Length: 451
Image 1: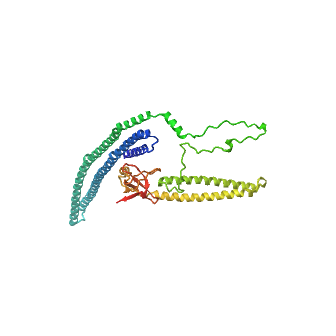
Image 2: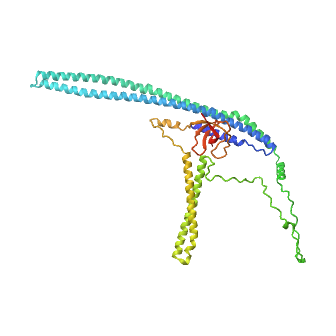
């Protein structure tokens, strides 16, 4: 199960890596015609690795894992049943043994009573016959109990020998064989993991060689001159500053540069960042998990500002108290505007804090799920390790193409069949699984449920 999880994480890395390699920008013809083509082929091989891993390893091992789980439960159930049968036989043996001991004691007591009655001179013949008859009946019953006890003891010993020398060893051998098959299948998965990578190495090597060849054709002098030509300003260099002779008493002519100051040109640096549009105040444009993190960060920032404002208010109140006790140090009324402003600031921050706490609570309530408690039994320790596999709850088809650029989202294409892992909780997002193994959030309005 851990190996399946490891391979799934590897497929996610391959998918992400391939997505980043597929560059769509064409800075120049040579870059697009050689480097990007090679990278496109290289990305295709990484996608092939991810597809072969998810279908050849994850799917097959997951199916085999369920079969092992069922087989293991069957063997453990057989062990439990055999142990219960042996315990029931032992209880029956103990019951037969106690009955034999009780009846034998009663028989000895009746025999002693018969002998005592026979030796009693006052006893009648009828009393003697009655005592002897009772002793004989008790002795007969005790002999029957003895025979039952001996037979039950022989039966239990036979069942005990069968349990320890035949039945349990057979089940243990089956468990051993099952575990050996599990280890062998896992070893085959290791080899398959390596073979998938080896099969694409020749093509990847050719792609990398093509990239190296393209890199060797790069002319840095030509590129730098091209960059200069594209971004040169076109302004003439300024002329020398003329000498202004005030000794002649003639007002110097204003230089052209002072009458017509050069206009400030717009910044032409090609790598300047564009201003991003402000995000929504409640971060509703983000997926649930990312939105919850941003809301919690906003709450932490407000708490820090609120603590600072509270400390400032406390300091002003203390200072006001000092001024009231010592008027020569200052006028207490001069602090009133600052105290009022600080109180208003504290009220505003508390209002914002309450607002964001409600939004965070709502977001947490929407994205949270209620997990049912697992049924407990004596074999829980063998079953817990198989309960972590998450199964889809439905299928859907993408109506439109969506580019997942935010944290936690994935990209989908129109007409793609997706598995629903988590339904829309009311925030307009749902978590889905692609056939390639990639998992993340998409808008609920972009898909149609498949019956």
